[in-house]
Amino acid sequence: MLILASGSPRRAELIKKITKQYRIVVPDVDERALNLPPKDLPAEESKMKAYAVKALFPEEEVLACDTIVVLDGEVLGKPKDEEDAFRMLHQESGRKQIVLSGYTYLGKGKEITRTVSSEVYFKKLSPELIERYIKEKHPLDKAGAYGIQDGFPLIEKVVGSVDNVIGFPTEDIKKHCPID
Image 1 (cartoon, rainbow, N blue to C red):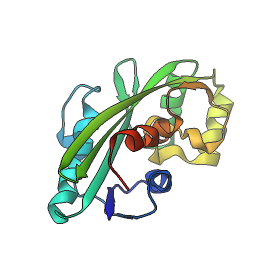
Image 2: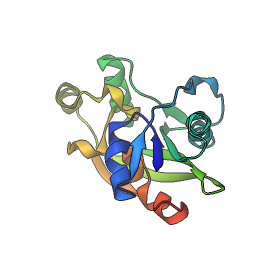
Image 3: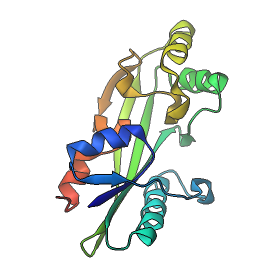
Image 4: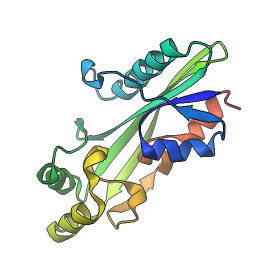
């Protein structure tokens, strides 16, 4: 049975697009241990997560993923508090960012690691809209301080996979990984 190496509730929902037979194991890793350029970071973090879980369950297939938001070459992580969320959303307002998800599949004698990129174009956001979003949607657990799945009018358009922006590039995983 496939193990999803993630504690993300969004990935737990999206994996159902790939398989109905899975279980979740949250990897015990320190993601801050890596000091890499943004383009390499998600793939390496997904490898770290996948191998940590594979060591515990060597006979199982493991799938891990990591997603980052990049604006002007800077990685926007999860906000520390509401003030940090406001700062991030204000910075993203009216601009394009890149969402990178790296995933690693270990199983059936294979290691597959890939990175998927999507472009997210933000609408111009008023301070009042940003405040309302933070109060209503509580985005402190989301990279870049937003969730595209929240149904809030922040995003003008996405070029690429919306699932990738949510944090799990299901289309690419289905295409490249031998998951039943």
